[in-house]
Amino acid sequence: MSLQAYTAAATRTESPRDMEYRLFGQVTRALVHASSVDAADVATRIDALDWNRRLWSTLATDCTSPHNALGQSMRAQIISLSLFVNRHSSAIMRGEETFQDLIDLNRMMMQGLSGQQQAA
Figure (cartoon, helix red, strand yellow):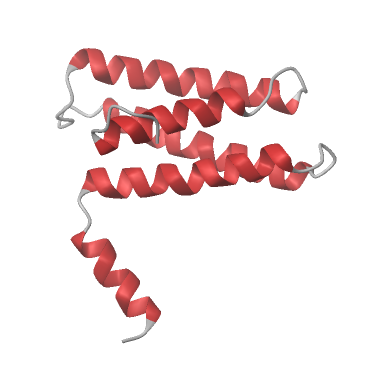
C-alpha cells in the first residue's frame, strides 16, 4: 500500500475532532519553528502566522453556522479567540509581540480536543 493510500484511509477514519487536533498540532509546530527562526526570515514567519489565522478563521466561520453543534457561549468564545489571533498575529509581525501566546492558545485547544486535563 502506498503512503498516499494510507494517508487517504487514515483521513477517512478520523473523526472531525481528531482532524482538528491533528491540524492544530501541525499549525502549532509551524508556529514553534517560526518563533525560532531569525526575524529576517519573514517568509517562514508569515507562512506560519497565515496558516494559523486561516485555521482560526475557518473555526470562527463554522461557529456562525446554524448547524454547528457547539453551544452559543462556546461558539462566541471561539469567534473572540479568532479575533485575538488576528490582532496578535499582526502585532508579532510589527515586532510588538512574540509567538508564545499563539502557541499556548493552540496547545490549550489541543488539550480540550483531546479531553485531557494536562498540557499537551
